[in-house]
Amino acid sequence: MESREARIAELRHKLAEQGYRITPQRLAVVGALVDARNHPSAEDLFARVRETCPTTSLLAAEVAAATGYEIRSHRVEFYGLCAGCR
Image (tube, rainbow, N blue to C red; front, top):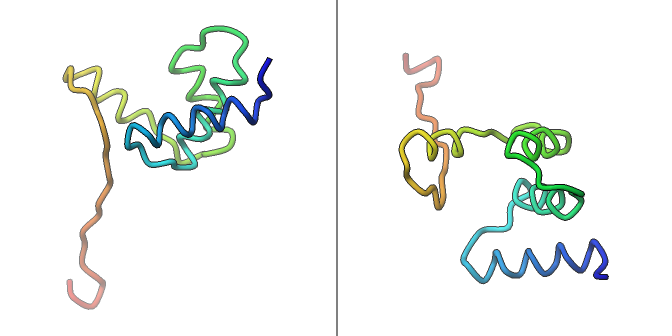
C-alpha cells in the first residue's frame, strides 16, 4: 500500500499535468480525500478542509450546481476607492 505522502504526490502530479494550479486549498482537499475512509460528500470535505484552510468557500461548487457550468478556474477581484478619493 502506498504511503499517504506518495499518494498525495501522485495526485499533485496529476493535477499539475492537467494544468491546475497547486494551491493550499487544493492540497488540503487532496489530503482530505487521501485520508477519507469512506466516500465523503462535498460538505464533509468542505468541513475537513476548513479546519486547515478557513478561507475556503463552497461558492464555486454552488455556482456550478446552480448554472450547470463546469468551473475550471476562478479569481476574486476587488475594486474600490481610498478614503481620500471618495
